[in-house]
Image (cartoon, rainbow, N blue to C red):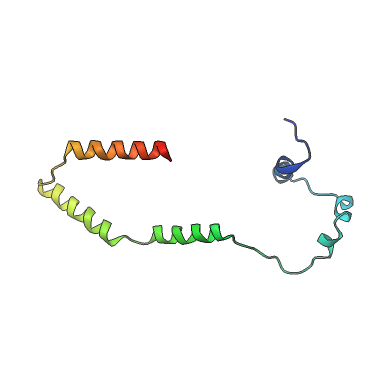
Length: 101
């Protein structure tokens, strides 16, 4: 494996191998040495949106829970009727959607 010392591969190698920058390399960046303030984290708008979506996905879906319960009761009572055509259509729709995405 060859690591060029430039770009993401170099950064990855430093993280994986635990290689630290030397004192000499630090001297090239005096602003980095002088910075003694607090650490800051900036969250992009895209990350904020993903957090919002994840939170929504974690919330209980009452309509879905009710539907699942109705289906469970139908199965238990023996009245649940499955249409093979509807199941096949749903599978095809899902496969085609996955292929496009």
